Length: 330
Ligand code: SF4
Ligand code: SF4
Image 1: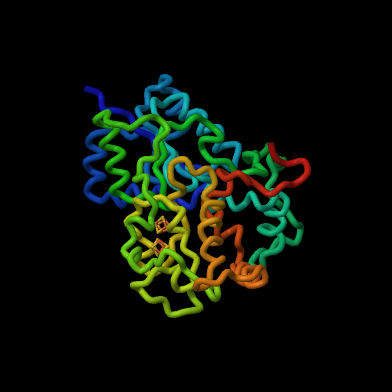
Image 2: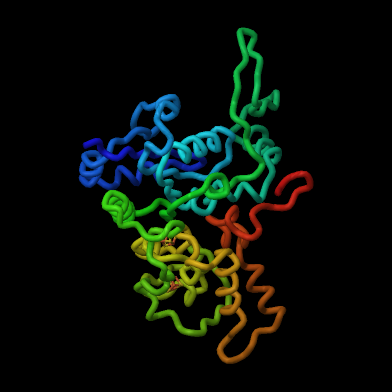
């Protein structure tokens, strides 16, 4: 009997989601035994034309990581959607926009200006930036269009399931693969991770008082972090109250606060706003006394890069989606 065909593809991402497939270790051999991998750019030499040659729906499942920034990524996502029975948004960038999604605070022009002309390590006296078409004398070279706005995968194609994380942990990947192979999948649209807040599974939860007063918001490098105590209690911003569990508390165990890569819980449409509301409700209390507006402002001013802190992984999927710029946006 023919094995189910599986594709892996990466769009705008760092490559970590591709590497996490390797982190399956010996389980990777079981996967390779059970399925027929038809596309995996990081590891295998298949081409776009190989996918085009397949019948529509012939691939059982495509795991697509990364957000959609380039015309080529949109084209490949649409091709894989057409050829696949199921599409899984694989990792934080595909699910929420991720770190590349922070580019939505800028425009294409400002990104090109900074990356190709201003950074100290760049030597570019002619100020050349990527062009979609360049005549090189013996022919024309083309590059895919670099979009102004980064999109999540489901803003580009319909997605069946979401596997969150930066990167998704191997146990959740194996659970997802087993569920697909045995047909024991939840309802379409489900996130394949527990619908519980990280705080609920965090080993420091017992030290998280119901009301926390913060005299000052600090950054991790500014203090010696107590490895037992809730980060919020120590004046550090932790997105645990607004983030889905399932990662195995990786950062917490490494004594770093959660940055929110698992995204929001079911029903929350804006993880950043949810986290902000959780933290602000904490900031408003000092002992039994209410803080003055002035005190709150001083504390909030102490948050370095608030937009990047609360929307680090989720800007394109949030209500904000991108910075408003005349002529850009939908
Ligand atoms: S806020 Fe962070 S450290 Fe505190 S209980 Fe929640 S996840 Fe754990
Ligand atoms: S602790 Fe937070 S940022 Fe770290 S892996 Fe888990 S969900 Fe992601």
